[in-house]
Amino acid sequence: MPEIDLKATAQKRSIEKRVALALAAALLALATTLSMAVSVEAASASAVVVMYHRFGEPAHPSTNITVEQVDAHIAELITGGYSVLPMPEIIARVASGEMLPDRTVGITIDDAYRSVFFVAWPRFRAADLPFTVFISTTPLDQGLSNYMSWDQVRVLAASGVTIGHHTVTHLHMAAATFDRNRREIEGAFQRYEKELNLRPTLFAYPYGETSKALSKFIKLGGFKAAFGQHSGIIGSIDDMFYLPRFAMNEKYGSIERFRLAVNALPLPVTDVTPVDHLITSPNPPAMGFTVKDGIAGLDRLACFASQEGRATLERLGPTRIEIRVKQPFPKGRSRVNCTLRTKQGRWRWLGWQYYRAP
Image (tube, rainbow, N blue to C red; front, top):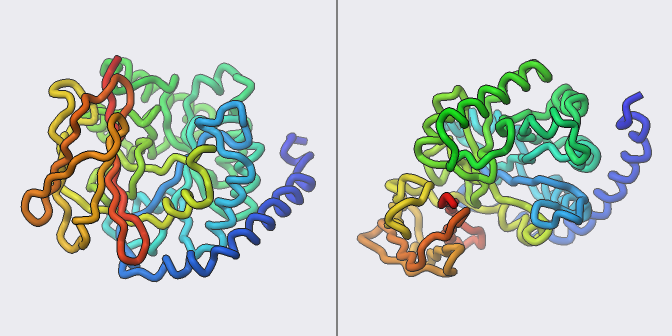
């Protein structure tokens, strides 16, 4: 029998015990959580997406979430009045402009580590929480011991887990040539079709890195949406091919931070500059956006750049915001986040990730 079947009974009891303990803790905060749910933003074409990588792998704290943390997250999602929906459904409804329930949440996992199968999947399955796993194919083809096998991925897919595209080799696509990126996309499609008999429609950029040209290429490749690794809410910007996700790891995976993220609201904007997430020249670029009508409290808006902290904001007219970043973006990845706390205590959140090639 498969290993998951041999351990199923003991594993289920352990998971139920852990989730029960986390549920008890979550219930203590339920009154506060429910009060946060009362909002004028009762429904919108928006959703929060969280992103995980590893589970219970303390040797990798920057990409790992502890078992206790993920159990607390699951308890919060079960008790807190959230609508946890499959990512394909969220994408279809947002793309069509259909309203989603307030505090709609999607769950994603990148890279197909072994702990997804043995730690995360049993927990999410027991809690009836759908999720998507984005898979780079080379680690599975090489049989690397800390990754899932294709057999295990087939078990996930058969159980209803959504499989997403994550290239062949998990490369830095924004710095790669067009031909290299084309081979990565086509090669992974071939492996998914052979091993899983499916062709993913959702894509996640490795490392969250993209450029204007790359996002256009992905859009033309037949995908319905693509995800980065920058914080924010789907629905803030009308771009289905660079969608935000809140990353969860040991440092940023506390239940307080998780609640803040899954209760966040969009900050809907237009006319965002720069239009390209690949930084060349000038550096830093001119940065700004126009807030859509109906968003109150812009005097409380704050923006932060990863290379310098809080940035100076200049307001041009009632809704145009210019971000005055002083320091150049360093090589590699950088982020800019803008937040606005509402009178109901929830945060509007808008973020970007930029990439400067080495």
